[in-house]
Amino acid sequence: MTELDVAQEFAYAPAPESRALVRIRDEYGLFIGGEFVEGTGEPFATVDPATEERLATVATASAADVDRAVQAARAAHNRVWGPMPGAERAKYLFRLARILQERARELAVLESIDNGKPIRESRDVDVPLAAAHFFYHAGWADKLGYAGLGADPKPLGVAGQVIPWNFPLLMLSWKIAPALACGNTVVLKPAETTPLTALLFAEICQQADLPAGVVNIVTGAGDTGRSLISHPDVDKVAFTGSTEVGRSIAQTVAGTSKKVTLELGGKAANIVFADSPVDQAVEGIVNGIFFNQGHVCCAGSRLLVEESVHDEVIERLQQRMGTLRVGDPLDKNTDIGAINSAEQLAKIRRLSAVGEAEGAQRWSPACQLPERGYFFAPTLFTGVSQAHRIAREEIFGPVLSVLTFRTPDEAVAKANNTPYGLSAGVWTEKGSRILWMAARLKAGVVWANTFNRFDPASPFGGYKESGYGREGGRHGLAGYLRPSPGGASPAGAGVRA
Ligand code: NAD
Image (spheres, rainbow, N blue to C red):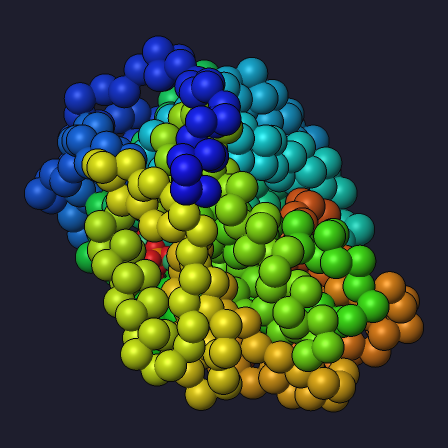
C-alpha cells in the first residue's frame, strides 16, 4: 500500500456546502445609478475554475458605459452623498455591514464557486473580514475630524477603483468602505474572472436603499479598467493588482490632479530562526504560502530558514504538507482549492519548470488532483539561491522557495533583496530580535510569530514595487480625504497627487 492509498483509505467523507444557497443568473448587466443596465461592450463568460463550466455571461462596460457610471457617481456625490452628514452616511455603512453578515453563507458559496477558494476560507476569512471593514469604517464616518487631517477634511469626489481576482469581495470592501465613509462615491471594476460577488454586492446596495449612484459596478477586462482610471472626471484612483499594470496606471495619471493608491505585488520573506517554536512556525509557513492557493500578494513565498534547523524544518513541513487536502472548493474539508484560471495555472506551471531547470529540488506530497478544473499540488523548492527566478518573481500560486541564512544580518540582506516590499514574517522566541528585525525589514507589514493576519484597523500597503499609499486604519482614510487647512496626513500615509 502506498502513502497515497493509506491517505485515501482513511480520508474524511466529503462534506460539501450546498450550491442551492446561491442563485446565479444566466446573464448580468452593469450596475449604474442604482439599476442594472445593459453594457455596450462584448459580453464575456465567467467560469467555475473547479469544473471549467460556464457560470454566467457578464456585460462588458465600454468607454461610454464607464462615462455613464462616472456621471452617475458625480451626480450622487454632488446632490446626496457629499452633503450628507457623516452620522447619516454611517447608518448606510452599518446597514451594508449587517446585510453582508446576514447573507454571509450565500456570499461565501458564490465566492468559492467563482474564485475556486476553499469554502472554509471564504466563510471564515473573506466574508467576515469584508463585513468588518464596513463596520470599522461606519465608525469613522462621523469622526473624520479626528483622523489627523484637520478639523473638517473633505471628500475627494468620485473614486475609480480597480481590483484583482484573489479576494474579490474582500478587496471590494477595502476599496468601497473607506471611500463611502469619507463621503466619496465610487465606480468599481471587479476582475474579469471573478465578477459575481461584486454584482451580488450591487444587489445588497439596493437592499440597503443606498442612494442611487453612490456605488456603481462596471464589469469588463483591462480596457474597461483603463477607461475608468483615465476618465477625466475621476478624482481618485485606487488600484490593487499586478506591478506591471500598476506601473502603467501611474504613467496614465501622472501630471493629472488625481490622487492614487497602488497595492501591487510581493515576494515576502518568512524568516525562521533556530530558536523558534518549530511546530508553530510550520503552521505559519503553511498558512503563509498555501492559504488561498498562494494567490496572496503578501504570501510568504520565500522561506528563509536558519541553516542549523533547515533539515528539521523541511522534514516537518513535508509531513504537514502531506496532510493538506486539495480538491473541491465547496468541500468543508478542503485546504487548497482550484487555481483561479487556466492562465494562472499555466504561469505557475511555467515558473515551477523554470525552478527545476535552474537546479532547485522540487517536491510535492503524493496527492490526487481532480480530473477536471485547474488544480496544482502544493510544491516546495529547496536548494534555492537568490539568483533563481523562483526566488525573485511572484509566482502567485502554492509554491514555496526555501533559502537558508546563518546570521540575522544575512537574513535581513536576503529578505530585502527583492524589488518588492509588501510583507515579511519573523519567527523567534526573542522579542528583542523581533524588534531588531522589524526595524530593518523593508516591508509595509511585518508579522511576528504569525502570518497573514488582517484587521481593518491596521494599515496595509507596500514599499518599492509593491506600491504606495495605505489601506485600512486611520492611515487609509488619508487616501480618500482632502485635509482641511492645518491638517497633515497621518505619518506614513504616503498618498501622492
Ligand atoms: P492584474 O493587474 O492583471 O489585474 C488587476 C485588475 O486590473 C483587473 O481587474 C484587471 O482587469 C485590471 N486591469 C488590467 N489591465 C488594466 C489596465 N491597463 N488599466 C486598468 N486596469 C487594468 O492583476 P491580477 O492578475 O488580477 O491580480 C494579481 C496581482 O494582484 C498580483 O500581482 C498580486 O500581488 C496583486 N495583489 C496585490 C494586493 C495588495 O494589496 N498589494 C492584493 C491582492 C493582489
